[in-house]
Length: 112
Image (cartoon, rainbow, N blue to C red; front, top):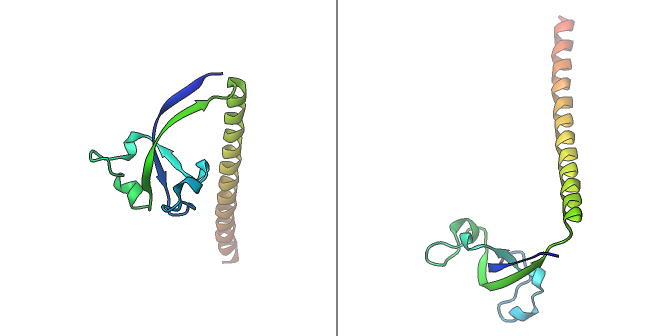
């Protein structure tokens, strides 16, 4: 199974349970990991992150054990199918709304 390793910036957001007095009590999933592009030239968070309440709390060396390629592909297809269903549902709702407007206009025209 292939692995990916790399460095990451570790952040916490305003909605996490992070406690600066006891950072070791925060579970790994309570942190957000991002790349160096999240930092400006001074090592501070870019304003887009900082203005949303994110705070840098450390750096991490990450090792990712990739899942099997077939499973990865199946997961991607499942995700795309869900996206497609959501887009179709939104489009159908909008088409129904527009059809309602058309029918209302036609009803007004037929009343005259």
